[in-house]
Length: 136
Image 1 (cartoon, rainbow, N blue to C red):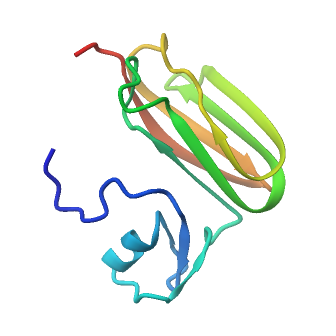
Image 2 (cartoon, helix red, strand yellow):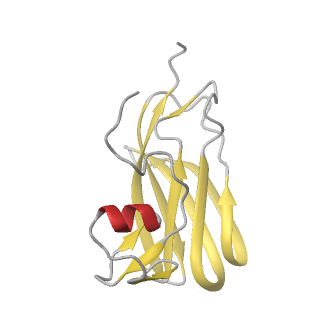
């Protein structure tokens, strides 16, 4: 794959830019025009999350679906995954964590669009997940 994104493949280490936007890491902040050092470690909001790979697949070539949640303090973390008909495919709760990793098994879910919903400390965020289980 060819990409012009110099930050492609970089890890999820969220930072809060001086523009009050949470960036995936320092590389993405600098690429967006944030001057080096004009940010703080961690998300701007109380909680943020990221996941890889997207799309998630059946062969797990790129590793299992990994959801990483980072909060500004210890709190209960709830993670759901729903299909487009709002049927719950996954739910996990972790008690009193500041950072937590979840690895749901998507095999058998079928192909399509899903939604990851994370709630921690009263903050809710939702992101789209594609599942592609076609064998190559």
